[in-house]
Length: 94
Image 1 (cartoon, rainbow, N blue to C red):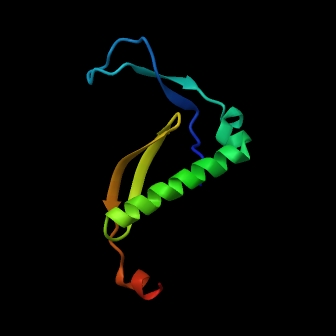
Image 2 (cartoon, rainbow, N blue to C red; image 1 turned 90 degrees about the vertical axis):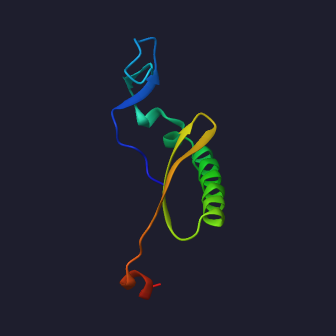
Image 3 (cartoon, rainbow, N blue to C red; image 1 turned 45 degrees about the horizontal axis):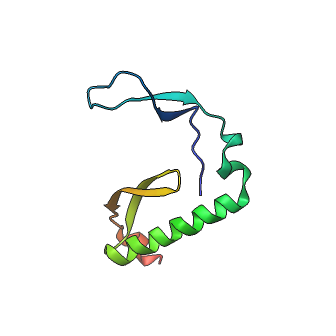
């Protein structure tokens, strides 16, 4: 698992809507104060949930996929799953 290295978090705001009708802005974020940085149990729990999601994706889609998602509160959202094209060399090394 890797942690993001961004200095700002997207947040919902009362700002005027953008051209997509969304209200959002950014605010500074200190990752050293976030639960995934400070709480080993939170990391373990999220890791277990991500593993379950990976098994679900693997059992549903054929072949290797690059998966993109987001965690919002207690919810996991799968945004995209791109099929991976494996080279012949990578298949020989399995």
